[in-house]
Image (tube, rainbow, N blue to C red; front, top):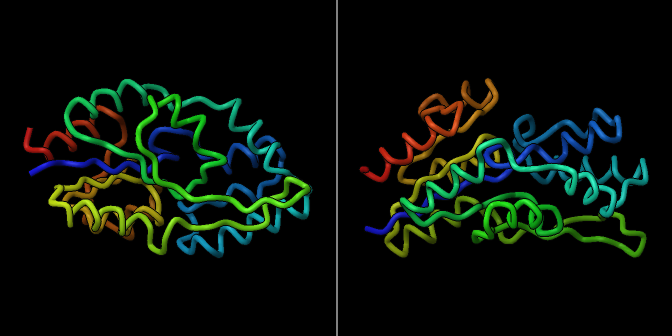
Length: 202
């Protein structure tokens, strides 16, 4: 059987984008992420309202992203995994945010969403790739006879992690660990690689 490792992006390979925007702007309300709020649509509408209130443009957020790098060791870890199995990034981030990080990861396949932006360069909404997108990715690969490992850290990753043949939590907050105690938890890339190897029967 062929294998596929599906990774979340933020918190696994990259810093949390919205938290860094919050730090840059001083707007603490933007620190809320999918690690805190399970309802993604509610969270995004909340964020868009704050951006509108403070006049924060897409271009400004992209400037913040340009100042960020991958987490330490992320590229070397991902390169090692890609020698063991096919691997993709499945993120609830957006094309307009994710691509600088994806290039730094070596241009793997990434599945993500799109932002809606008006003539002022303000974010007005977003377009999901499809409903329940992370779970659907795993289901699609399983339909193609892949054995799938799903890895993430937040509530929005749980569809992918639950559907996968093996689900792994990477550096999740305590509330996610408490709500999903059935999944192994890894705190560093060495532990995560060991769990992946175990899932691949290596």
